[in-house]
Amino acid sequence: MEDMKSKPDSYWEERLSPEQFRVTRMRGTESPFSGEYVTHKGGGVYHCVACGHPLFSSDTKFESGTGWPSFYDVIEQGSVETKVDRSHFMVRTEVVCANCGAHLGHVFDDGPDPTGQRYCINSVALKFEGGE
Ligand SMILES: [Zn+2]
Image (cartoon, rainbow, N blue to C red; front, side, top):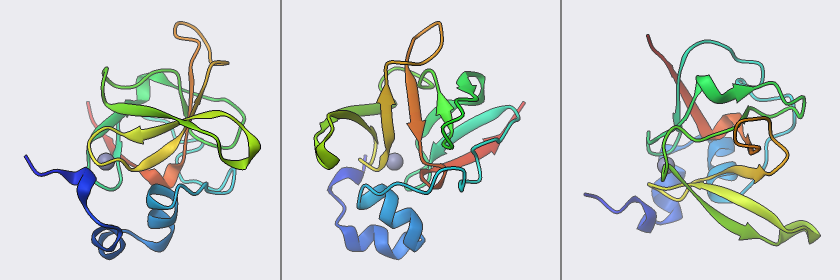
């Protein structure tokens, strides 16, 4: 299997839009309430915009009021990886795609039951595919 994590920035720059590249590779954040999936409803799967890896199910999406798509769980264990992020004078937990390392957003422990987790994810890092 191809190692997507070792691809250089130039590989992604050719394949992603400037905003997708800024968020997923430069660890940027889209403006709140600007993303196309903030209030998106409907059944299906949210994939990594960079590599297509399945990340979140619409079943765990909830309205957090923060302005970013929010999920209380990942689609399956191991679909994302987390890292300690000490940027911007805060200690947060960064969420990245387990397959390609794309920055997705952050996870906080103030989410709803049953997990208590709140995955706060940039719309631009996601690609939704409806199903069922
Ligand atoms: Zn990915």
